[in-house]
Amino acid sequence: MSLKDRLQNDFKEAMKARDEIRKNTVNLARAAIKQYEVDNREELDEQGILTILTKQVKMRKDALSDFEKAGRTDLLEAYNREIQILMSICRSSSLKKKLRRL
Image (cartoon, rainbow, N blue to C red; front, side, top):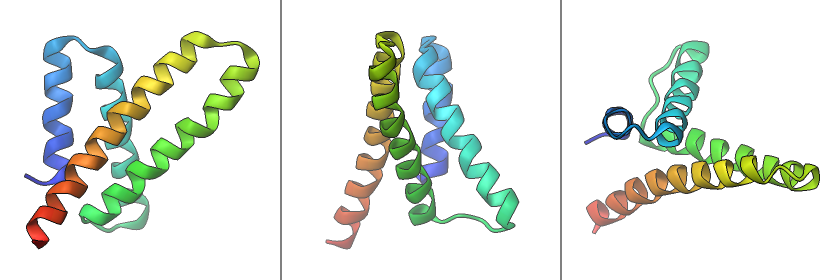
């Protein structure tokens, strides 16, 4: 299963489970991937998708310090959950690639 297919399935599962944070996180990741593909007129491979997902994680981690300074614990918790979701997607696909190489 490709990473795009996995994101699509995660989106559907989050909708069925009514998990708003997971649904929104996966949807934003899918939108970032689609935006890159439209802007550059190229189809991304697995490595390109992982690059975009890591950029999404970095963007959220950078925002954490701002939320902490502002005392926004609600946003801190939400962004930490989003980071966990994105990292789980990145980890699983990276591990599968490493296993395929062996």
